[in-house]
Length: 588
Image (cartoon, rainbow, N blue to C red):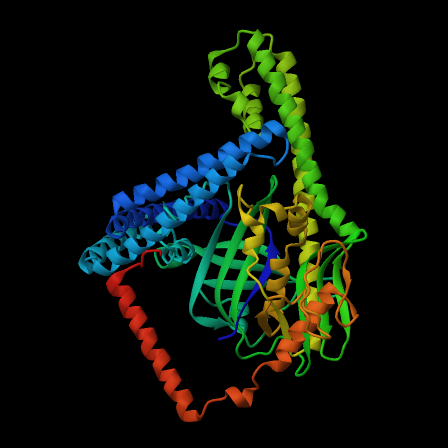
């Protein structure tokens, strides 16, 4: 099945807004209840897979590493340089070695306990969790289309490992901040013509007869069933504009209306999940191969996001221009201004409170004022103060109200700039990916786990010396994973090995170590060929693509293909049976 999601912006519900708010709040509460049940299930399962003595030894070894790193950080803070003594370095290495040994012992212990554990005990724990889940569903008060969203969010956590290294790995509770969703599931699917006919009791799209932008955009109203009165539907109605029509041959599987917060403002949008198997929506080429090297490289006033090279020798770059980079950085600049203003307002209030007698409610509410880090706390205090004024508070209250008014303005500005710049970057990436899909049948990229670049190295790690703050900042500006996702969504993408593709000369095959950060261009010492590093990486990926086994070489006979399919089905059944019998497997 080919599935796609169409998203449309909409307005807040013009009918039954209070029911929508109630369903979102109850859905959020139901999700946290399911999280609590899942955390309890995991807490009951862990003793079956862990030896307390071995776990304690592993935690003590990890604590020794933390203390050694803290000592190095203290030494560096005093000298303002990375010049800690050899004794501290050796202590850290010894602690890391003990931690690695303890972790191996812990993993072996967990595997042994899992193999020897009682399957009946695990089955009883899982069955008890299911009973609690059914009871929570019965009393949650959430309509069925919406409680499925909460259950899907928690079900994704059930497959996670029980342990995150030494520590427990549990799903987290989510605080209520006003964001939520309501939805409706269409069992069996619904045709697009049927939903516009407005005869179904779950979902309708009412045409208003108005169009904009030269008739390209149609004004509609989404009718979403959010409750029932007996057997009659209770509708919530969301005005929206269809900026692109729904495919006439597609099948609607479910619809979700979400409310998100962009700064202090609400944003509503409708997500329609479609089965598009019966319709071809993408314009794709039938020939041609292009290699795309993703990353981030600073060029004059721009950042290079990707370099591409096709099998005909054509090449190019995708860059974030100076204007877009300035917009992406503007939100961080505004946030910095807000933080400075907040620190000044907090310090001023603390000094004023230290010199005066104030009501007990104000003293109690500001007892931890020095530890506040969120401007929202100070803004909430200002609003509460407005309703409980007292003699002699004009100086402090007026200053605090002025700060709150200005901070709200900066907050709106920051959120607006961030939203618009991210949308522009997303549009740039999607247009680039769509252009690749129209021109090339296959897109190849390097097989790299980009999560490694997101983790900040600890003191003593091997990659600590390569951790450069500007490079980490540029990674957030570029978001190469977003570009990779856009390419994967639009194109037929293949990942190839990224081992030494930048330092291997595509002309002669020589592997040469050099400082790739000094200059983009490099000249091979063996053959004298000069090349752009990113173009060289693309050329090496194309070479891998040409040398891969052909389809004829790897094709199996029809009998062998049928045998493989039968084996896959058998393995799948075995895995499902094992999952039912054993429950969640312990993390290694």
